[in-house]
Image (cartoon, rainbow, N blue to C red; front, side):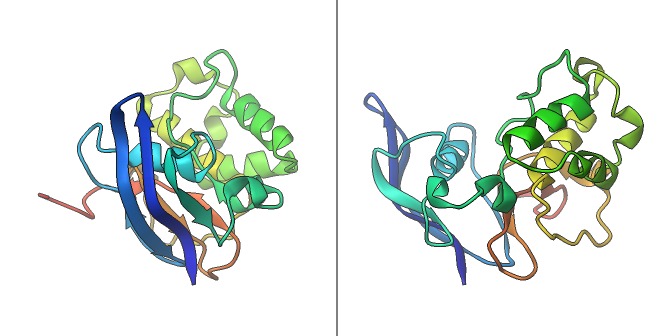
Length: 189
């Protein structure tokens, strides 16, 4: 089952191409890394996928639909394209609570995802006081808010880095999350 598809995706800013005729498919249940140098178009492609940018040409699909066509998309798709998107004056809990509220998700989900990424003890600390690793784990928590039914066997959160990667849930159902890539999985490329 194809969970994510890019078909001839092109995105230009004026005359500058950010993505040029990108075509790829991500099968349900697969982890797929978007690798490339700065400016290669990784984030732009993902921004087009989740409706934050409009493609100049081509299309993107999640389970055969455009992101805005998904019913309650935050219940199915978790996307964090930048770990700097949190309000620094709010606590980690407050930032996630805002996201949950906007997405129509229960407030109880916030404590669950904070526990999953081992930030329960820092839930009332302002994000401006978080270390880089804590901010990355908060980003992962934001991506997991939709109760995406993912299994994390033997994952050590200290080994995670927020980059460009996508993972689909183990059932291959209508649940997709942008997840961090595991350091050391790809070495010396």
